[in-house]
Length: 407
Ligand code: CTP
Image (cartoon, rainbow, N blue to C red; front, side):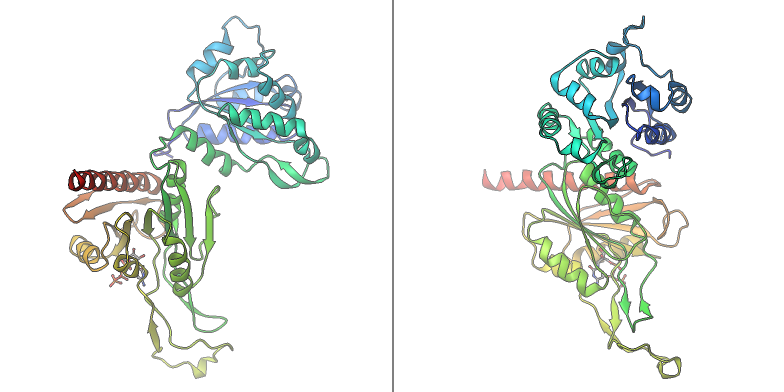
């Protein structure tokens, strides 16, 4: 993953003595595959579940256990770290960190560390719910550490409840949030993504090839950069991104309703969804027999959600639309910018194999009232970050213009 934001980052990875320690091995491998440097520190209990050799092999670096080694690792390891990730974090280690103990290499390293810390607890549900553990977690939050709340489900002990180690995807997003600049903090962002489906009958629908990847990349990157995110998503094959409000819709009318409900409080709205322009004029509750289907379908126009937002937009709201084009990109983008009263139109080419609907990369042109800029081919996450950079510069320009008129 050449464009991964984890490339070149140094992660101090603490592993504690829980059965979930075996999952940490997969996380170390995933981090390394994304180009991160990983230095693993195991507690004595962790080394009884998974050997240091496993972590050394997966990380490509020595795995550390011993506090009393010659290299002063409790100082050198945290000094080199961009972030600390502790997974699984046991009740014992959480208590140690809350108290500020420095009696093993992991707790001493965290105490000596000024990089951001992510704690991913894993334990029995009653151990987690105990006031002592909750008080300790509250103390860690107070120190500024980020806690990835454990999932609910079946635990290793056979009981059901909260205490499962979060999935890697959730931890990865939280880690990226710790590493990212928080320049969207305070913004309430509404993003639409994916296609809409317009049913003809219980078996058939009209739709398009949108995968939702671009909209989901925008949602993830906005959250990482500190925004509060609502993602209104059409039907896609992607997992809901963690730590945001995801509203699932199917049709353009459902999307229009969800957008109008959430747009009032949004400071930035991004319409990345490929909304079906038409729906069936009439829906048949029974499957239409093929002998009864007319060769020319009767259609009704769907509302243009972006145009509706543009027509009643607050002056302090930034409105960003997309334009999916197969030709005349710049002219079409500019036409849509003006017709829909948007601040920015992101034009993308739907014919190129590396820029089309299902691709993981994109090449876009950013069109504003007075500028046009074509970016290089980038991953959809890097593209999303560049769209946010542009949105922030537009907000700044607007603030500066506002300050001038009031001066
Ligand atoms: N859009 C919308 N509601 C619609 C159609 C489009 O909100 N009913 C939004 C899309 O989310 C996108 C922008 O309008 O942000 C442009 O969409 P696009 O499909 O490129 O353009 P259309 O307006 O549908 O025009 P055309 O199909 O003629 O290119």
